[in-house]
Image (cartoon, rainbow, N blue to C red; front, side, top):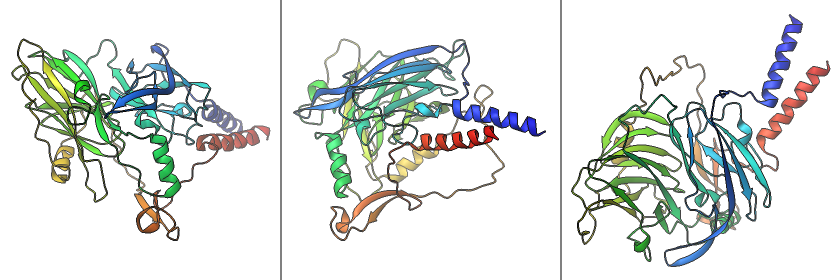
Amino acid sequence: MGANRGLLFTFLCFVVLHGWSLYSAEAAVHYYDFVLKKSNFTRLCNTKSMLTVNDSFPGPVIRVQKGDVAYVNVHNQGKYGVTIHWHGVKQPRNPWYDGPENITQCPIPAGTNFTQEIIFSDEEGTLWWHAHSEWSRATVHGAIIISPTDGTTYPFAKPDAEEVIVLGSWYTGDVKAIIDATLATGASPNLSDAYTINGQPGDLYNCSKDSTYHLLVEHGKTYLLRIISAVMNEEMFFGIAKHNITVVGMDGAYLEPINVQYIMITPGQTMDVLLTANQSPSYYYMVGSPYADTIAPFDKTVTTAIVRYHGNYGPPPSPASPSLPASNDTPAAENFMRRLKSLVSKDYPINVPKNVTTSLYITASVNLIDCHGKCAGPMGMRLSASMNNISFQKPTVDILEAYYQYVLLICLHFLML
C-alpha cells in the first residue's frame, strides 16, 4: 500500500511540475510571430508613437478551430518587459503561458523573444489576446477566432460572412507615462480622449471623418459580428441604426439567441451577434457609447463606424443613428444582462455543480490610502485597488514560479526519503 501511494505521489509530482498534455494528437497546430514594437499612428489631429504588434492597431487575428494548439513567438522590440495574455482560453495544465505579469509568468524582457503555447479545449466562438503589463493592453490587443471543428457547425444558420469589431480606447498621451504618473502620485489616471471602432474614432471626433471604419454589406445577407471590448475602463452600449441584432455567443461559448436593439458589453468581454442587412440600401451608423453607473469622471464621448450597403445610390447627408440608452441608464443595462443565458442542448451540455459545500465572499474595491495629504488622489490620499481590503504589491518573481519551487522542494524531499 505504501509503495502504491509513493508511486501515486511521484506521478502527481510529475503532473504538477511538467504539466499534462490534454489536447488530442490530431489537433491542428498553428504558428504566429508577434513583433512588439513602437509604431507611429495619427488620430485626433496628432501623431504619436505607441506600442503595437506587427505595426497594427488592433493587432493581428489568431484563427484556430476548437481543440487546436497555437504557438506565438513574441519578439519584444520595445523598451520594457511585457507579457501577452490569451483572454478566456482555459489553458488546461498549461498555466505557464497564460500571461498575467508576475502572476503566471515574468514579463518578456526588452530585446528578447519568447514562444507561448496556447492550448484550446472547449472554447468556441470569439475571445481575444492582449498585453498584461500595466496599461499596455490599450494598444496591444487583437482577436482570437475559434471556429467549430470539421464536421460540425454553428448552433444557428451559417452566416454569409463574418467581421471582427473591436471597441477600444484612444489616449493622445503615452499610456505608459499616464499609468506611471498615476502610480507615482496616487491620482486618478487621465481619461481617454476617444473611443474607437477597429482602431478609428469615427465621424464625431476632430480630424477623423476620412478614416471612419466602414462595414460593407449586401442586402439580404447575414453577418456574424465578433465584437470585442478592448475599452480600458468603461462599459459600452453598442447598436446599429434601424437594425436589430441577435446575440448568439459570449466569451467563447454559445448563448440562447436573443434579438435586441443594443448590447451592453464590459471591458474584456466578447459577444457574437448576427446582423441581417434588411434595410433600404444606405449608410447607417454603428455606435458605441459609454455606460457608467458611477459619480467618478469618465470619457463621455461616442465612437461611430458606418454600415454601408452595396448598390447604386447616393449617400445620405448624414447616416441614420441608433437610439442608445443614456450613459446612466442602469435599468437598460440590467434588462439586457438578465436576458443572457447559456445555450443548453445535447450538443452543448451545461453541467452546473448542484452540491455547493463552500461559499466565498469576495469584494473588489478601490480604496483610499492615507499619505498625510502628500498624494494627488481625493483628499490628498492615494487611490489603491484591493480584494477583500487587501492590496497587491507586484513581486519580483512570479507567483506561479514561487509555487512551483515550493512544490519542487516538497517532491524532492519526498523522493529522497
